[in-house]
Length: 69
Image (cartoon, rainbow, N blue to C red; front, side):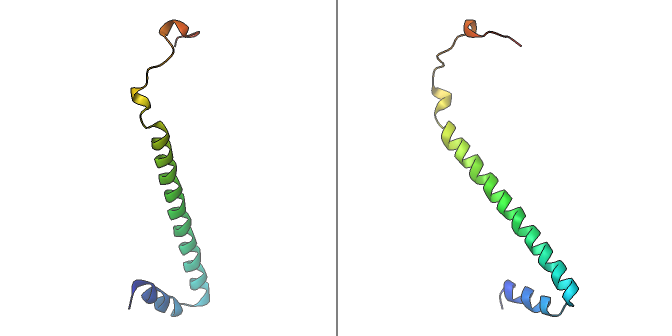
């Protein structure tokens, strides 16, 4: 028996109110995983977009700055 089947079998033994609570928790975990995956894709996208830029020469000089902090 795999893990998903074990979870379903255990869930069936709970009263309906606790089954609903378990469903809420499963949805929470699913959303958490989706957010983490989206963040990972965002980081990958940004790193891909920035790849090689550290070697580029800037067309600007210190004298081009209008404000210095």
